[in-house]
Image (cartoon, rainbow over all chains, first blue to last red):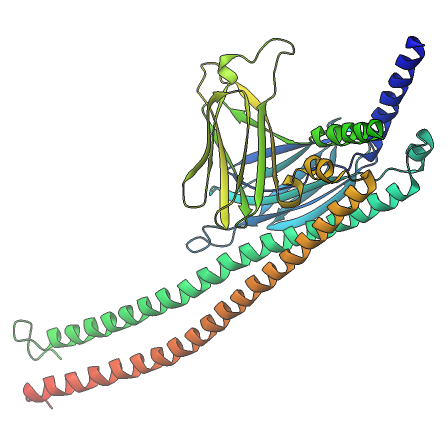
Length: 218
Length: 211
C-alpha cells in the first residue's frame, strides 16, 4: 500500500515536471542600455530549439552636438556552436529575428568602430510556443495552451516594437535638442563674428589714413 | 480538494522560479553599467550572480563583485560590496534612467568574470505566485490575467509614446520658428552693420577733410 502511494506521488511529480517544461513561457524580456566603448557582448540562454529569438537595438547618440554623425554600430548574433546567425553592419539601430536551430547560450555582440563611447539600448526576447509534439507527449496539456502561447508571443511582438519605437524616440529627441541648440548658438556666433569682422575692417581703413603711416599713400 | 490546491501551488511555485537571465563578461578592474528607463511608480526586480568558474567549490575572492544601483538623480537604491550574488527590488520614485553598475576589484593576472544578471520591470516583475495563492486561481486563468496585464501595459506605453511625440513636434515647431526669426535678424544685422560702417567712414573722412 505504502509503495503504491509513493509511486503515485512520484508519477504526479514527473507529470508536473513535464508540464512545467511545456508551459514554460519563453524568456524574460530585457530592455536595457549599455555603453559600448569598443566591443560589448551580452548572452542569453535559449532553452528549446525552434524558439524564435527577436530583438532590436538603437544607438543613442549622446555627443551629437559637437561631433558629426556616428558611423554606426556593428551587431553580430552568434549561436552556441560559434556560427554567426545574424549580422548587421554600420546601423544606428535595427531589428533582428531568427529561429534558434539549437538550444544553448546565444551571444549578441555590439562593436563600436568610432573612438567615442556610444550608448546602445537593446531588447532581446526569446519566444517559445509549445507545438503538437509537446502536446502529444503529455496529456495534461490543453490545445488551448498553444493558442494562449501564440497570443502571448503576438503581444510580445507588439511590446518589442514599442520598445524599439521608444528607443528611437529617445534618439530623435537628442537630435532635435541638439538642432535647437545649434540654431541658437551658431546664429549668435555668426552675429558676433560679423560685427567683429566689420569693426576690424573700419579700424584697418582708419589706420590707412592715420598720420603715422604715409599720409598721402592712398 | 486541498491536494489539488497544493499541486496547483506547487506548479506555480516551480513556474515562478524559472529564471532566464542575460550574461555579460567583466574584466577585473573594469566597471560596466547597465541602465534601464523606468517610469515612476513601476515595480522593478533585479537579480545578479557571479557564474562560478569551478563547479562545486565556492567562488574565489577575486571573483566577487561590487554592485551599485542608482536613480537618475544619483541616489543609491542598492549597494552590494564584494558579494557573489544578490537581488534588489524597489518601486521607482521618478521616471528616468536607473543604472546598475558592476565592478570587480583589480587582480594581478587579469581575470574575466561572467555575471548573470536579470532585471525585470513592470508586468514581468509582478509576483504571480502570490496573486495565484491569494485567489486560488486556476493555471489558465493566471495566464490570461498575465496577458491582460501585458495588454494594459502596451496601452499605457502607447499613451506615453504619443505624449513624447507631441513634445517632439512642439520642439520642432519652435526650432523652425527660431530659424525663421534668426534668419530675418541676421539680414537685419548685416544691413545695419553695413550702414553703420558707411556712416562712420563718411564721418571720419569728412572730419579728415578728405571728402
